[in-house]
Structure formats: structure tokens, C-alpha cells
Length: 87
Picture 1 (spheres, rainbow, N blue to C red):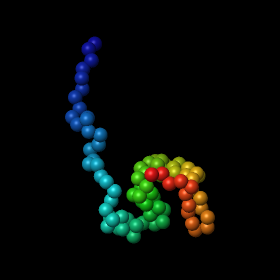
Picture 2: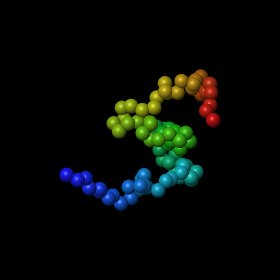
Picture 3: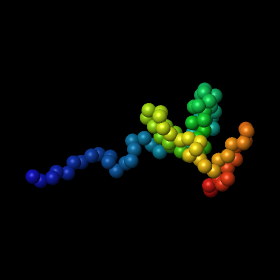
Picture 4: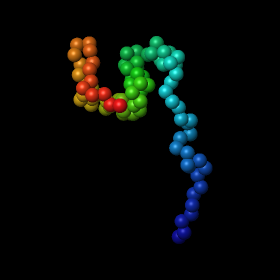
């Protein structure tokens, strides 16, 4: 039995969606004005820290990024400090 090649159009492209950079400030403003505190926090982490959405939670919302995952962060009252800041 001989193997046949299957031709798939566009298989070289990684995604059907165009690459997109960070949202412009006016779009972020709209998000932050309409969102609750949890959504604002998630949006800020994604927009300013460059993390992916899957880092914050899995599909079921049972696992994700926790404060204990950032050992260099110290919270003192209302102040947040970092021992080292990556460049």
C-alpha cells in the first residue's frame, strides 16, 4: 500500500488571524471603563506584561497564575515591591 500526500492549502501559515500588537490606548480605556475589577486586572496583565490568556486560567477556570508564582514580589500594606525586575 503506497502512501499518498495530502495537500492542505495554507498549511505553512501559523494562524488564520493576522498578527496583532498591543491594543491602542483608546481601546484599553474602553476595556478598563467597562470591566469589573477581575477583568481589569486580567486585561492589565495581558496588555502590559505580555502574558497570554492561557497563563491566567485554564479552560475550566480552576488553575492559573497565582501570586505565589511570583516569588520576587513583596506586598507591604498597599505597596508592591519587587526584589528584581527583569529587563
